[in-house]
Amino acid sequence: MKSYVLALALAGYSGISFSAETYIGGAGASVCGSWSESRRSPLTTEKIMTEQMTVSWVMGFISAMNNEHAAGYPNFTSNFRRIGADGVTGWLDNYCKANPIDSISDAAFNLTLQILE
Image (cartoon, rainbow, N blue to C red):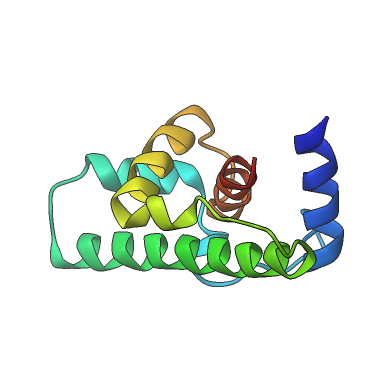
């Protein structure tokens, strides 16, 4: 119940809505299946840059959500500091393997909910 209420609060408070009218730009608009496929492909400079850009986008998303959440809770302590880029990369690997048609923004939102639990 706590997660459900938090999800509703975050979605309403931050203006995030996963409707067809919402515009998500950058790496967040990519599909998880593309992330998973890229992770299985041979290492290239383009692949490294794309994966780093995606992880950076997710970390920025989480940072923004973390900041918005902290504004409403004076005694808030975030678990985000403990994750880092490697943690985000591993989480995206697992989430996207299980949810290939979700977007990277969906993955970022779900990771944010886990961090804020």
